[in-house]
Image (tube, rainbow, N blue to C red; front, side):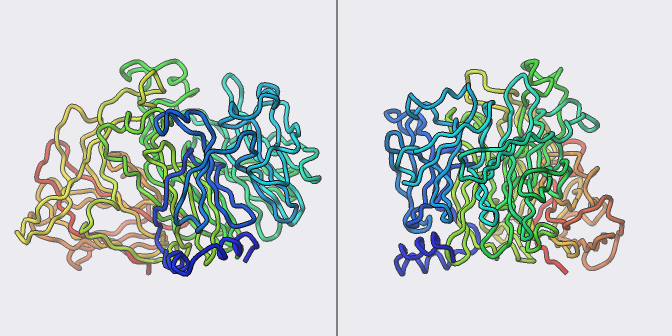
Length: 586
């Protein structure tokens, strides 16, 4: 165990040790003071801190001041503090060198001393040996352009090298990734500018372009042989990756990774036993709309991809784990479903302290007993800190009977709302929502409930087909069981390798597995099973085989979602009831 984690452990009472040991599935332990990305750090004495900038809605008298949450019990509890004047603040601590290092400028730069360099003149690293609360002892010029830093500096102990990965992504300029490396503890830096991933090219079912985000928000981890692996955010349907075999001096050209993700942040984190965690949003956004016809009219930047019209893929985040340096991955499990996802006031809830109401963006920290602390999200109404045990990612089965409500499924529908960026109101690249599929009485009169998937005509809605989306541990071979009762038009059942919106009517065109269940006996409970492997899927109803089909597209790491949506082409109140869901790998 590292010295820092030993220090964390030494701070725990017997009761806290038992509480930390007992955590398995993710548990919420707090709310970070800032959108997650580069604010979570640990001191040599075992204190954990999460930094941020105070926002007016949190505490008007402390608007704009730097703050941090402190935990001395491995993240089980937290206390807020004001950052001392001129303090370094959030930083990477390297036990091997004794250095604390962070990048400048960054959010909250107005709270730094007036004699710091002008952020318009480039970017810098701040270094000291005295800790988070002490001033910078050195300010070293890093690059002649101002960069967007979404990660703290990364120390590569095997090479005694510091590496900073960031991006140049400011208006009216082509965006690209920048990697800076130092072999003399930050005294001098060598900078590499890396070419970006391809841009998004609209094609059906898209009717407009996406935000052209090039490559950004890079995350880097060292593999067991010293190779560096980078994942990066793009505007495409995948995060892109590249490799460096010389410690960051040179990099391969960007290519698609296995991980679906659009305009969201990936995060790689290496555990002390060599396993690698990957945090990201394994989500597919709705197809882009015709930006020329949206009302109120979008601006030119939103129409052409300089900015986005709406985010529809940031309501759930995921975790996967690799034991072989990223050659294979397990898990692909939902970490957290946004509590706000069904809110009719989604656009305005949480105010403007952070305009996105998202659970993307994250940072991780390893704790004693193999547990992991993760901070994620944007806006005080959506972001969270959680502790989990990576062993949770190795489960091979899951079940849902709705006895605890709809916490584990996605059902929301979108209300016709203003699109586009901030225009003086707290709505920002988002639409308001309504719950779609609802829990209703079981028709057997047994005082139980089932999920009703129907179609209700409502002029307020963007789309009317209700659905439900449920995650299970990824597997290349397995079976999914659905207890259902068709009372109306029936449902389309798809098995997929990523999250889709419940109301997305294009899922059937892209899912590896698709079966329609409509031509069955009405108003009777039916047990449907889909068995699948890497080539074929088979549907059985009440134990009798009824259909077989090849997988319609590859799923390299297996399937991890069931998407159920009404087949109704017009209003259908009767719909289809879903009583239970389960999955097991074979």
